[in-house]
Length: 495
Image (cartoon, rainbow, N blue to C red; front, side, top):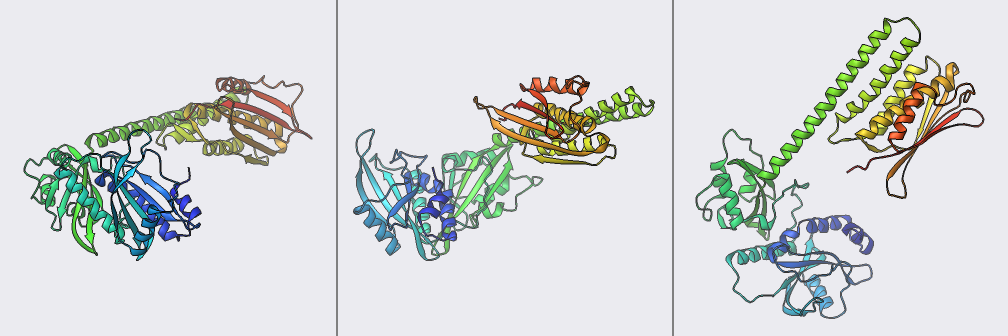
């Protein structure tokens, strides 16, 4: 399914600023649909000189009209196309009292339709249709009347080029308030003229136990916010309804998220609506997750410090020994401990149990070359990417890479130096599991017939770790000279 941006850019000649305006509208029109208890469909005039539907939203507060998605529908010649043309040319809202819409899963529906031109900069860029299911003839409640009046005001703002608000902040936090969470209607002075039951409950949880209707929302919030509590600088703009802004209020042991939408007519503000939601439990869980993440990072940091201490002790011990196998063994043990410490260092800087292994591989490669080359010129080339890996896989893979690169430098290149090439391929197997295929080549003297691959401690460690990763490893000669170590590893899925 193509995105709205792709549909608008591929099927219309609208300039970028008009495309962005329609994206803003669609990003916020769930509010209008919920207040209207109606489906909304966005129509644009395509390059084929016909009206095409590019977006569709259903209400979460009432009965929908269209079961099937309307995106991609073309307005048939006749009443619908004529009304779209008329609304666009006259720049006014057209209302059709009642039409019959066939319903695939039941009896035909009686629907009220409205054609609302979307205006920006004085010209029509699209037409939004509103489809209300007239499923009941009962007398509407005050809540419904208030919602519908507010929705009508927002539709007039769409036609007046005053909605959506281009200056409203983007990037909603989790738990942003919606119509069903609570709605307050304010007059031009910020006095509450209507509050839905959920909105009243949210204010009660903040500590306000008096009447809400007829009171100043700014006064209600101010009276219940402690002087010691931090206050968002956008709070005055939200509780008075003067700007399209968002804020959160912490009081009464809970947190209430608020969002203001000013209502204007011909550029003059005549009121506002404020959406609010009690997000106290949600924010508490977020704090718990942040605490857990911080604890995990601290654990990795301490493990890294402890491993570095062990490596330092091994280094001190090796300095007290004469040259020989014991000194070499301690130096290799120090390098292996340091390799594991690098993984924990990377984990301590992230927010989850995965790491960008390319960073670890490059750091490890530089360290091995510096220690193992002994002054010989060694050049390294890396092609491909490891990507993100789980911590368990990263530790094993870091050890494997360190051992194989050291072997390539010490036993392949020797004192003459040369080049080490690393080729990485990440792909999926027939079961859909992620598999790494890694080759480490050198252009040295090649495999020593007297030294069978896998006989040393380092290669035995490698074979054990590759087996743990459900992989295989092989060594083979490279023409005209050199050695290639090639291994595969099945990676754990990243959730």
